[in-house]
Image (cartoon, rainbow, N blue to C red; front, side, top):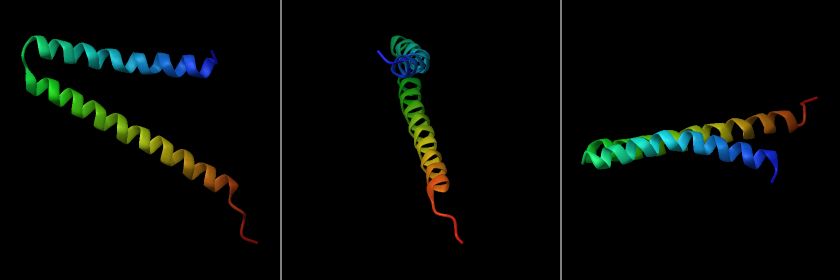
Amino acid sequence: MPQTVVGVTLVALGTLLPELVVAVQAQRRRNADLLVGNLLGSNLFNSLTGGAIIGLGLLVAYLLTRPLIS
């Protein structure tokens, strides 16, 4: 397995486990507000952060490959 895949998988697990623990504990304590807030908040943050990283990567790639004005 390529090192990149292993690295990305480990990072994904490292960010998932704390959220999973909070969700399980909120469910056990029957705290629906905390459960829904944790799920929506973490998904929103991950989506916005991932989109920003991809957008910045595309911007840098465009700036590095565009022809210079002469």
